[in-house]
Image (tube, rainbow, N blue to C red; front, side, top):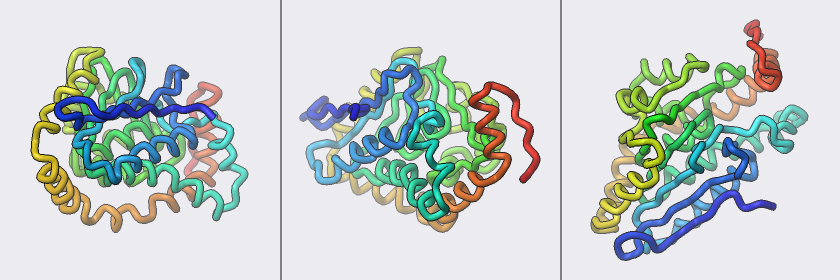
Length: 268
């Protein structure tokens, strides 16, 4: 089994910065089920780490992540699962984003190239996002006959407001440029191409120079206030996704994607 995730610790002032590198060496950095498990394990590895204050998550030079791997054998086996097995398998994504959101450390995404679907869901679960000016985001789930899940809608709503969230999610074919993402509040900083990681590390240095306990407690307070109703608002995420995945529109969306043609949706 290949390791898609590497963790470097002990960087920055007093060794208080860590870097998590996600790279499948496939050019697109897709989120296969195994990649999601490894990224979840990486986040959980910091649970008892009192020595780290800030964590930078980065992809490769060409992509943060293309989102869920529609060509992965385990992922494609979902269509053969019964509803119970499907619901259990669909918990991989929410576990991933929840693990990163609940980290005590300040988390910063360094985004280059493109960040799509599940990649966006992961990025908005972090505290800050730094993006290369030639990079773009896209949320294609609706165009594939699915709903945007992994509790992403509440997180995007907190960042952008209702209208922009609808625009980003419903207009599935539209790319969101780095400048638009910054104007909408979806990312906090846009930098020259190839400089997202350096800028994320610079921000991590500033965070790591602060008193660790105060930083952790402040993050906890802000998150609890901001996300207090998220579970209530999105508790049906998994079941909605499971239901949508059984629709003819979903099958049509996936088939059209894999054969590179325009889908014909019929609302059934």
